[in-house]
Length: 115
Length: 116
Image 1 (cartoon, rainbow over the protein chains, first blue to last red):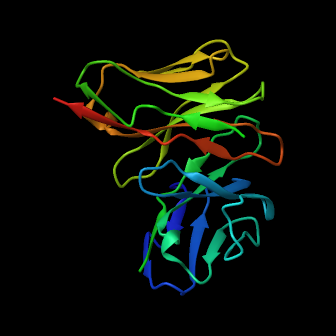
Image 2 (cartoon, each protein chain N blue to C red):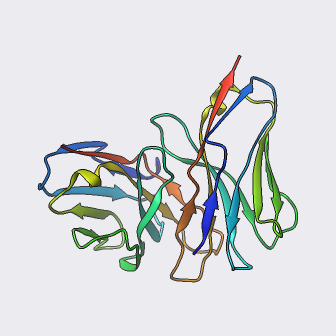
Image 3 (cartoon, rainbow over the protein chains, first blue to last red):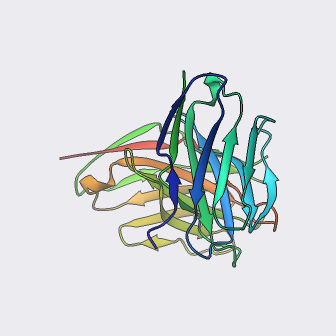
């Protein structure tokens, strides 16, 4: 297994369009996280799954954002009616979730540019 | 709310020298975890070192060590014998695990330059 993968790596879209990103976690990792990182900032938490259950959502996650992890494996993050302020790097991370000190491993991210 | 502060936007160190990156945090929790992550240019974030708050001993990973001062809520990273490959953004992060809340809270990062 080569780690967390994300697709696409880059996405350019026009304002108002919908976009969907995919994250494939490390095999057997129960927890999956989405973060957003804007230029010059650290990543900010968006949402988190334990298996297929979405356990926490940030207030940053407006109604235009939705995330799923239907079978407890890969996850998708959809942004509807994109706005220029959505331009950012979207990071996915996964962890085993079996101990309280488990480590989150990050994917390479999807860079979204909204024109 | 928990916050993480990195007051050094940029640092520079000469190859083979030692550099210390600062991090402070604010929390009312007594049990939590602290991390340093490295993000090289255009590459993914990787874990450098981790510290459990209940452990008094400072964590060490090869050339990387931390100075964890729980009372002062300070968590600095020391890089010894700096190498060109250490050049990257370094993020300090905090996590408290309450079962349903497992998110990382990051600082704004410190960009480390390594010069010859």
